[in-house]
Length: 107
Image (tube, rainbow, N blue to C red):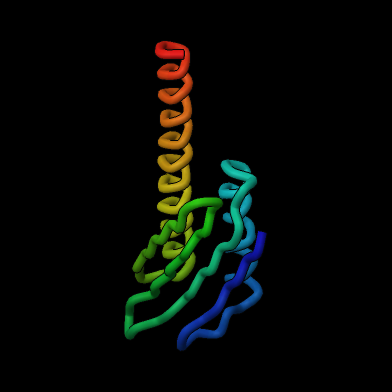
């Protein structure tokens, strides 16, 4: 998996990079078919923003979080991405189970 962390009007410190990489483990435990993750950290006056684009086999997920603390923004961003990835995986599993049932019923 390819992971890219960049900053817009902010320097990406080793502590911020470490925080994002530790949160990355939650995503890789859910799905091993993740192609890439791009995270952009930015600052606008008092708002600390984290945006993430997650590319999975067959789909692209996007989330963003804005807080007063960059660490909180990163935490919320990864929570949103985990929720989206979990819903996407459940949708795939439901679709495949439905197809198997239809094949057994009509096959």
